[in-house]
Length: 196
Figure (spheres, helix red, strand yellow):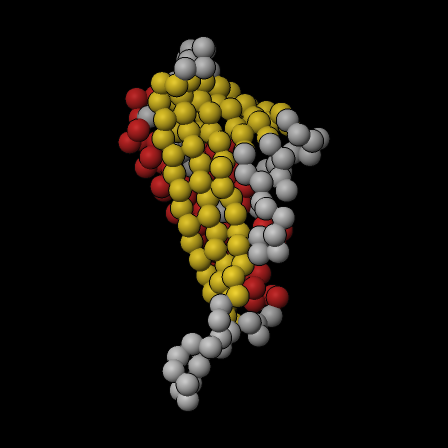
């Protein structure tokens, strides 16, 4: 299970401080454009605190470990490469509340008896949820928004692990693209007054 993490983004410098253990989220280069080519959302705040409250349940259907880079770390990277603090009296808080990957084995007995039945399939459901708030020096909330996205992919049970890895890579890239668009839309719509 991933520990609670906290970070601070200020003047282009990212500092992650751990609250539960000494390991930290590794930084990964986003897919598509290089990070330097991606425009940042500059907020009129003194810093952006990055945290995660997500902990995957210890259940066999939670398969976050199948990903070479977890969704939690990918979302944390998105925050570091897409947002910056431009200075101000307030503070922004970016909190990851869901970054799950769940495997479901679907019933192979579909269709009427005597007809061709669909092969047993496996569905992978990815979910991301993030909250974002602006608070003053007293901790009072001055602005809030959130974004939630979910996406799924299916495969036949007889397909190889290599095919599964390709499917999960495609799922990861697709949900990150959807999350990026949804998060930016929510930020501009609800806390746009803090964006330069």
